[in-house]
Length: 316
Image (tube, rainbow, N blue to C red):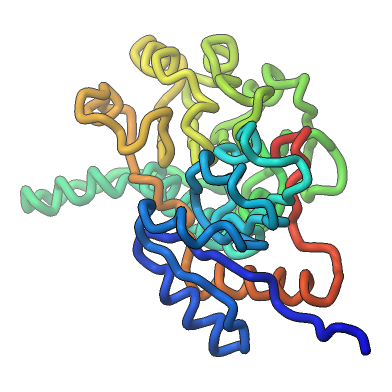
């Protein structure tokens, strides 16, 4: 008689929600799960693990996990694992893809609308009991450049059209991603020159690290805004501050940074042309991540290919 299929032996490592993930899986019939909240508790439970769900994971434990076959990252970013030399190439890394598009779009448009409609100015006038009318701007007719036209970028592009914007997209493939005009990764200068708003949604790879440098920033329109919700290290932050100081662009709206939390000493906190948000443009909600994890557990049990497996060579 053939052996009955079973779910992979799973370790969930999460500092605040590990048990909630385990409880949600248990309600779906997944019971061979160990929930770990503290790093120091991982060692004794890892030897038999066949799968891991985590944000991050201590790399020194990977050589001690001979049965590990795949990792479900409970987020979209995987750069912290892709380059981990202790992780065997036979272990598949899976990204979380799907639930972040709506959140990212709402973040981007809330911040862009705040600028064009003058919300800060209105709040200051209200606080001073000042009735002073002015003519707000509009997103309609402007160009939104999206660097990274995957599922999240395409979700943002759909909203942009509802606001009457034109979408320019930059990606490895310049076709079939829903932009009005496509640019390849060798066309950064032309892309930057074309945008009123430039939104970064790229993964961090060897090719994209520091891609927003002085050359690209100087190509932007002096009325343009840079938005970064991809990875902090996409942007040369010193070059960005210099570009803002020299009026090479109008402003920057930043959700991610080279160092997080952003140090109090960073000039970005106090720069009059910078808006800082604390890496919350799109957050990993337990209900969404648990469902993605469950779907891959089912696929693994049934011998089907896992979803959203990372190409280690590309880095995403």
